[in-house]
Length: 270
Image (cartoon, rainbow, N blue to C red; front, side, top):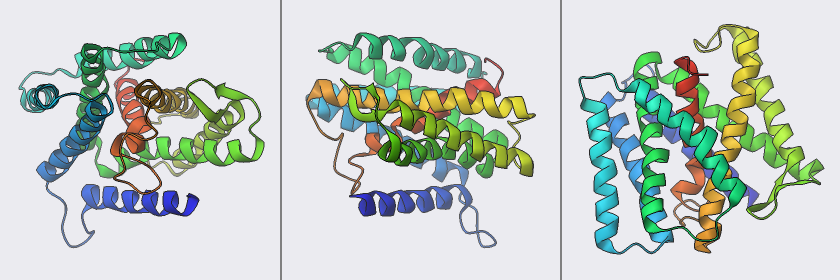
């Protein structure tokens, strides 16, 4: 299992780098290719969510079409909608998702699934394409790596030292020790980036700790809400496309949370 997880993670990492950077010195991937692939990733994860909850074909098409139209409007609108997206991101990940995880409803309506899919995936897509456009591919991948580092640190520290369950009714394998380990890994990672002065979103060392603490917590929330979706739907994985990782949603659950909140932080809402 660990070998499968590692190999799949490496493949996804290199695919992401290819989409962001192309082949250095040979060609750069056109922006519309990156935007299109981001849209496909988003749609694939939402489709998995509809499959988990057994949406009929009409409901699936309706939700996927709605999200596609919203993404299209956000990307091509001549107006600045970034403030609205940032507010939605903060409300989603600092209020709505924590409330759901606290109460842990045993059932969820399809209408609620549609609403959650919109506020979870649409801001993440917007944040991804805007951050890439504003700051470039390297800055974006350094932000994405926060989720990867947090997940890796939590996994290994949790396996070695984990004793106290973080959310036993949602994800029994997650521990408080693992969460702390993930945060420490992220702090070290961001300290290295800051010491090398290679990021535009870490102006000083206090920002390192602010980003590390907030985004590690948000990364965990992204993982937990996806686990809650699966627990309510009574499925093990969101899909089976990625060996060792399940489906697309399984792989990007933390990323979408980190992207949305990092975008709000960079633009000064937190």
